[in-house]
Length: 199
Image (tube, rainbow, N blue to C red):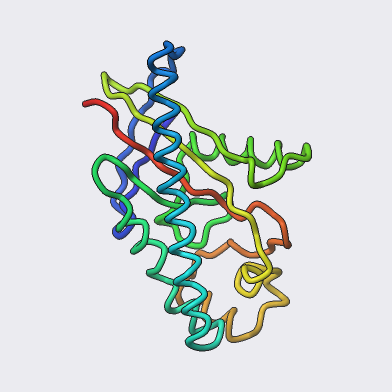
């Protein structure tokens, strides 16, 4: 299993081979609960801050103009919240920015989200956390699925049905974009958090 920690501003990528996932003791279970609470708080702030800025960007102009403005919103908000030993970001099985590329662990979790969703589980319940160990380094990982809401479809819906100016803006700012074709209620991606617990 590979863990890739990404810089939210520059696509400088560090690849770490995760060696082992070990059973948790009672004290580790308590620690995991505290970490999850902290992760949920950070993930909630990331989601709400990005949502607030995206709405503001849309109100400033057309959806195409919002795409231009939104190009740096996600990385900027994620960087702001990536403090201390936390890395905070977003990823998806259908990416808009290559800098948000998932690693194999994230891919596995997102695929499990899709399966759980297909089995009838509500998106709001789709989350996963885990402690992994690598070369004496203890890492905590958390992921939370993101839903596709009606406003998302202006830029993430069926590409053929997007406004021409939106398609043009996507081609200009996100030439590798495949984050389209979503329908209302789909899993659009996930918030992903990593914290180093020991060196």
